[in-house]
Amino acid sequence: MDNSRTKNMIGQENFDLIQDKTVMIIGLGGVGGYACEALVRSGIGKVILIDNDKVDNSNINRQIITTEKTIGKRKVEVMKERLLSINPKLKIISYDVYFSEENIEQIFNEKIDYVVDAIDTMSSKVALWKYCLGNNIKVISCLGMARRLDPQKVFITKLSKTENDPMAKALRSLARKNNVSLDIPVVFSKEKPLEISKAEKENLGSMIFVPATAGIICGYYIINDIIDIKDK
Image 1: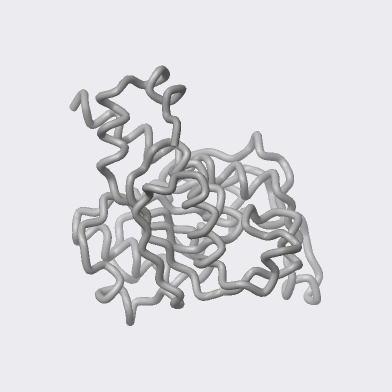
Image 2: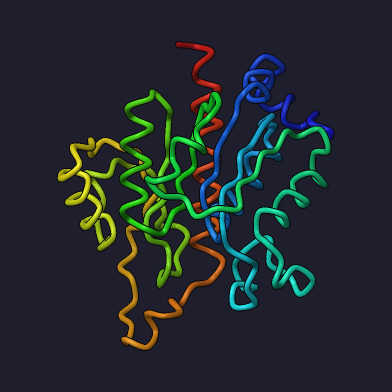
């Protein structure tokens, strides 16, 4: 993999720091897929992929791993193949499992520097936060990105400071019940989500712009934090 442009941007020392890190990405959908792409193209040396789903044709409009050729295949396998086609020397571990509090100890069985939380289930998100905070693992969590269209309204903040995000409100309540800090860094959209009917709840409207932007921002957050370590 030719990293000359990256090195010209950030320097060899910073690039070496990036290559030395391990990032876990939980959820390889509209957000997680683009986070993987951004991290690997930026030089991350090792990734751990977690998802228990298969590629679905309804996601061809927004998920980076979804094409006519990949429909029906396991997401972790498709993503692994894609990332190795970008960087054949990339170290990859993949778990085709549903992430939950029950299997968290088995999954976190080695040194992990950062976690991208692209999980949909709120109880699993809070369980992840609690584990990461308790084990000094940095995490960036993505909140609701469906039913939104404007990528210019996607930002990084703390869980305690979000707006127009029903998921964040529910997560704050659940976090308090589990004694989890509301200072968790999150990627969220200031855009008010579109109203939907009961029928539409089964297949939420979404396009590429917002989830892809959120995923790239997750990747940026991690890379920027790694580079900053050099000066701390």
